[in-house]
Image 1 (cartoon, one colour):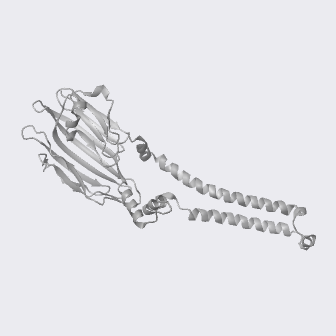
Image 2: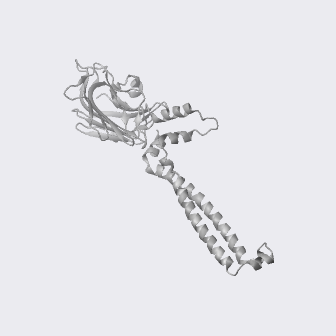
Image 3: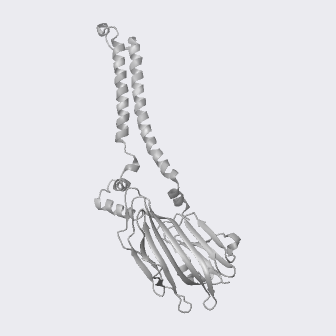
Length: 342
């Protein structure tokens, strides 16, 4: 699991820690300068108070008027105080916080080898990093099991899926340089002529009215693939929500390890981006208990993990179970909900 990445994204202290490091470097520079001033002033006063150690002739000492040393020292001290104060102010004004650099400056700072001054290389890196600025702050995956058909060995499930996509950059909009398609594949299981329907599909940008692609009054039948092109543009430090509602028949089996290659499309959720948190809710509206499993398919590691569930994954009729996955998911990892036969 991507637990370290998740903690990095979730914890405000991660960014605070970097800020403290930046300011600590400033303070260190100023303290060094201040110490140099103090040493110089100390040396000066030591020699002025010990005239016998002055490296000059007796005739020169006789030409100095009484009180000269005191007057000169006071003037020097005043100049040094003003100089230190001005240095401190200039240090604050000219030292730029790393978080105040714009997106392009931050990316350029990453390329620091001696022979990497190619402008096209910098542009390539900016484009590549810009594609990673958005992550899924939360995915809700709610499944309500309403029917079971013995002839097809399939459950009728009503799905609600919601993605909350966050732009993690506060000084650059997230805009894909390619078309973004959201789709639900055609159902491969039907009971009678019922393949299921997409009943609602809505997107919403922060501070804007929702865009309705499928209205509940005009559902899309899932005998054909459902797909829509989305304008996935997320303003600086804002969210973008995608909410999908549909129902479909999902075939099942006795043993997931044996039949995992036959797993129906409608039983899992995944993302093209890093996912911080997944919320899964399973509701049982059958007139019998429902047995299920939740598995995490970590494709990058080629591993499948079985989550520990309350009551060993048994939900009584009319009840529901809620599970939160807080360890994060990498792109293309699957959160799978698998239902056993009654």
